[in-house]
Amino acid sequence: MKLNNKLLHNSKLLRKQQTPWESRLWYFLRGKRFLNYKFKRQYIIGEFIVDFCCFKEKLIIELDGSQHNDLLLQKDTIRDSALRKLGYKKLRFWNNEIDENIEGVLEKILNHLSPILSPGRREEKNI
Image (tube, rainbow, N blue to C red):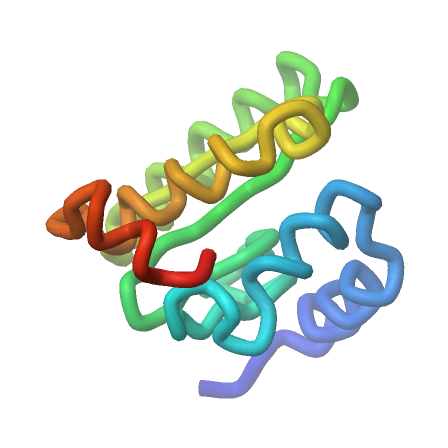
């Protein structure tokens, strides 16, 4: 499938201009650091660019700041519906969650990727 050139350009631009919160989360997700799951950032799915995606598990992670107003939330609802139809699950975190509780964010991501791991086994893994 040929990618839309505008989407590809925007995806590359977003990777170069990532926010501090995206950078912080990316530190934990990149290079299969997170339980050996492969994540991509500013990943193109259909006609959308998502912040982070684990393609194998069809998990999308989105980060939002205070700029996320009612109009954007309406667009997100349409976008989320389209991505769900493609089989993706989405986790959304606010930037302040990355600042104040990165461990909790990582735990939520882990729970969606590996729901069968018991808390004792999680300690054995390096997240």
